[in-house]
Image (tube, rainbow, N blue to C red; front, side, top):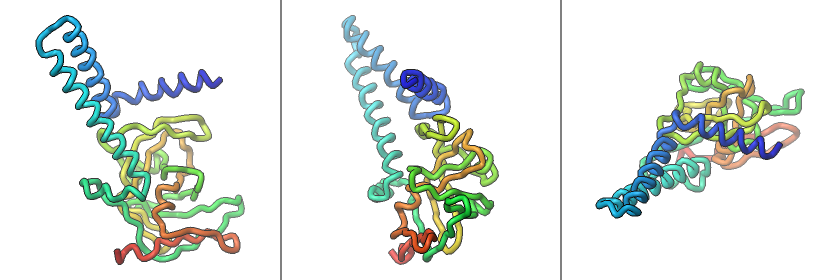
Length: 218
């Protein structure tokens, strides 16, 4: 079963290649590097330059991937100085009551469209279903690397997007990274890439209290 899961994951990545500029670039750079190696082996002029170009392209793609992953960690928000969009959360404390099912649910406005979220401290990323993402006008980020996301229906390939504006209670988030996940069903998830950008969050008397702090004054 574990071997089959690995094969399925590889198949998902292969299927995602045509939708990702980074993956297409990586495959092209690997092919160019292979051609350069053949040129060097056969002592054809220019083989070393072709190999160098391939290596530089792969380094550039690796840096792009690292920058994409860094977006999920608020400690690396300094990278916005490199021209990446800023992710900000502002407002005041907001209380989310515990629902009868034992979870914390909230109704947010995503780009002005009402979207229901499950607050999930076990989820790394904020995720929206394809249907709700389309309603909110969200589109996959061009050139982004697909994200493998575990769901109740198995592992799916999700695509990165940027939520221009997300509001609920007294909190407003701008430029928040999220993923568009097919087969997510009707459950959208507000994950740790949102919660970790708050000044703090806690549970009191069964209620979840989200505190963005005084970020607006920074």
